[in-house]
Length: 99
Image (cartoon, rainbow, N blue to C red; front, side):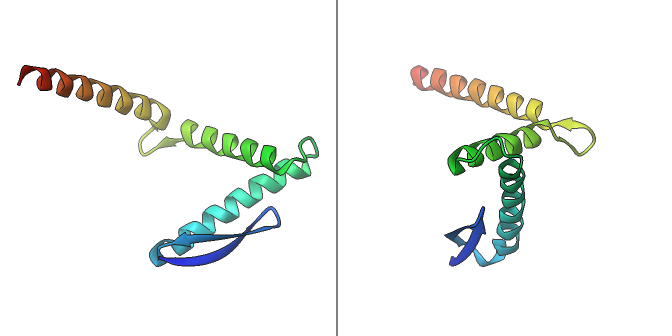
């Protein structure tokens, strides 16, 4: 694990990252930095913390509304997986009470 310095919205940060994921991290930093600059440059929000929160919300919305593969709705898939996990947890809890 190596440490690297990145800049997001004109602020230097040091982050730890496995060497094989360095380019992915740099891509993520670039994307986040772009989103935060767009929000700041729109002029409606000036507080860095609020800019970061709005950027995170925008990116989360993009992620959850993205269709992947052959039209798979990622948000629906996530909800279904959480539902399956709940059902599995309940079934395992019932098994524990049987033994």
